[in-house]
Length: 339
Image 1: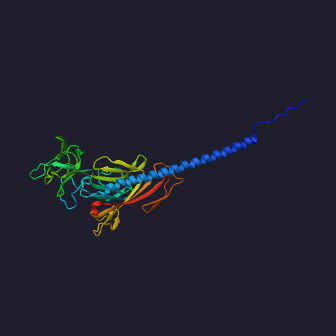
Image 2: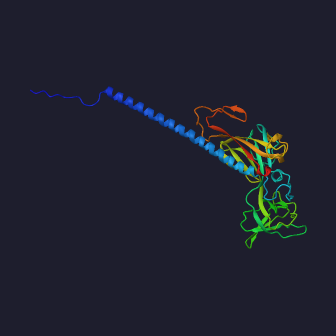
Image 3: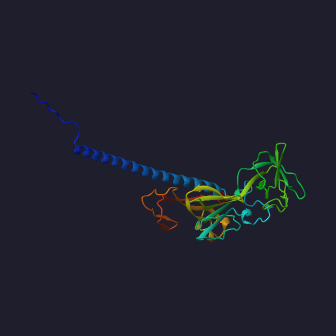
């Protein structure tokens, strides 16, 4: 009788367990690589966003601070008639191009902040800077009827000037200038008739209709007081701007702190001889540059493996979160003070 040989097929239990172990080791390596790559991506993305936010914040601040006090051809020495009521109040103190508030304690600034919510809910310990001057492009004055004394309450410009009722504006012909508030605008014959009456016509209102002279052929441009400060936006600190009496607007989220120093020209050679904080600036008219330091944080938490110590404004701090932080500093020259 012929014997039939039967061979075993498949894997033994030991072979299966060895294969599974090798597979698990390979899978663990793949997961580790993916996790590491994802974390690296999060760090790089957070860093890129921080750098972009810093660039944008400095772009806005530099553009405004650089032009502080600019009033077209109405430069220094040009006589200006300010017809506004309460022209020395914070929002209408348009003769002071730059003003700063140094955070000397958690909730105290020097000089003291203006009242009535002019700078609403700023975060303590952060500096504040205020810039005054031209806010937008100018438009040509087509007609300005005379009067006695000269300079009536009506100025005619080309329709579509973009000016609105309530705007504070400057009119100048390079020889003289005047500041007033627009009380109403009438459009006809492709012209905007800009009116500045007195009386109960809004805040601050005008104390007189007379501008001192006729400004036909001159320029009309909106001017304003613009305050920059740090304030909470939901759960993040952010850079805010408040223009005149309008509502504060969020500009850049993730800016945790702002510290500012002002460069004063002591020998009238158009360069800064000393940098001082706002509370010890001797003469704001002599400030020719501004040094701003910003501390930015990542919007997302758990970016770093552990809390990241940082040094800002001479102090080293270890936070309780794991956000990424970076410090940026720039110096901005006031063009109207160095030429």
